[in-house]
Amino acid sequence: MSNLVVVGFHNATDAFEMRAALAKLQTQYLIEMDDAVVVTRDDKGKVQLHQAVNLTATGAIGGAFWGMLIGMLFFNPLLGAAVGAGSGALSGKLSDLGIDDKFMKELGETLKDNSSALFVLVRKSTPDKVLEGLKDFAGKGHVIQTSLTKDNEEALKKFMEGK
Image (tube, rainbow, N blue to C red; front, side, top):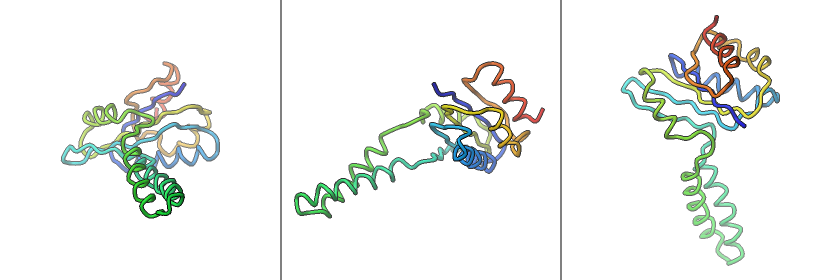
């Protein structure tokens, strides 16, 4: 089962940098994430989701490939690629993997202007090594919400608040 961790920051930069640091830790097999999304709220109060993977673009590329392949069977690869790209983009746009977008937008509405939050869905991790890898972020943020055990949540709060 995956755990949700939401960490808030006073600016957008820290959330993007922490997501990049977590991605690096994932390449070292210290954490396995299902999803990592940065939610920002600008000075006008507009909330924006910054997904790690653009599902629309991924769907369009995959659809174009399969459409071209099928189109070759019917002697019209360009038409097949165009139809495949369109249907792939549509399916990518409609699919919602990981953390629910509506939930992230609702929580994003509670953020202060010019701030951000990092939403991470963690499948597996080595907590002590992950915190060591994130030591540059100690004291820079605050825990907004988690599905961790009480003890693990307290340890994360102390770390993020620099206590």
